[in-house]
Image (cartoon, rainbow, N blue to C red; front, side, top):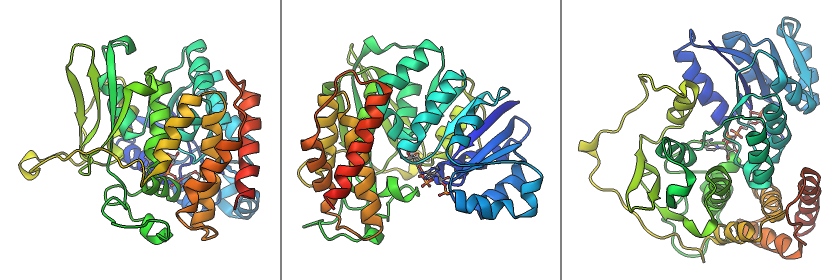
Length: 380
Ligand SMILES: NC(=O)c1ccc[n+]([C@@H]2O[C@H](COP(=O)([O-])OP(=O)(O)OC[C@H]3O[C@@H](n4cnc5c(N)ncnc54)[C@H](OP(=O)(O)O)[C@@H]3O)[C@@H](O)[C@H]2O)c1
């Protein structure tokens, strides 16, 4: 039995992971779960999966949970530090990081130090501190299994190959909810921007998909996960989201991994890794696929994608600054404090002011992250 901890079990990825586990209860044991404040869903998950420990990071929600009778039957830890304790549990084999944002960074590093296999969904971790995370994983001989469908498919395509054989990586993008909208995008409302045509996801990644920042974050993530230089990572719009990404090898052959667009598929792959087993998840029916379309992304309409490349070329602390400015701007947009068009503007202004620290330590990254948060909030 694989023993599993899920950070962010109440989110979209967390729930998808539990739905895969639900189908094969005899193979997996859920040792720990975490939520920020959704204690009602967490309670249902506890009743169904019987974890030994849960973490609730929002202390007020946590206090409310402690007054419930279920709280007396298991170990409950309140606050972010609990995430570090949870991933250290000695018997745990696999830690699924499904938090949203930079908050995932320290628990990921802690899990790597504790030599746990990591299933990484939280792309902001690799974006902010990819070099530190991959170096720590190498030193501790820990495998990082990417959950994001694009990186998961590249990971699959690369099995049996090494980075030096790659000519280029082509990340596919569905184009998000705004791809078909003509004209000015600056006044798009959160309800329109949240309506993703293919994927049902958490709010932050849905807005990132609307700005195409999501693809930019994925370019940075791919650079760190697969050791490919930014000039050899391309983005192509592929609205059907059936090809999850492509790897071109130096001899000209291209590997593409195709699957029905459903996040339970990469999670199923990771939960069973390194083997492959039968799944009851949706499969592609080629008789119903008339065509697959591809086109170049529009960097002028979606400048966030360009800013992500800029941050990656500048290296050092710049990707962490891009990430935090984006987190601040997306949060403000969702709370209707700023218009859609302000998101790229806040990111650019924050990046323009930043003095990059090359080869940053973890402390440098955390300082840059706090700096970017403060600056981006001021630009609002
Ligand atoms: N959703 C997808 O299909 C998808 C695909 C690829 C990659 N990803 C990446 O996976 C990550 C998770 O995405 P998601 O869509 O699952 O997000 P989500 O639905 O918003 O869920 C986030 C989870 O993290 C918890 N959380 C949020 N903020 C937190 C904080 N400050 N401290 C501690 N816990 C916190 C939430 O708890 P509460 O529920 O209590 O708020 C929830 O359990 C993101 O980095 C995203 O980019 C997602």
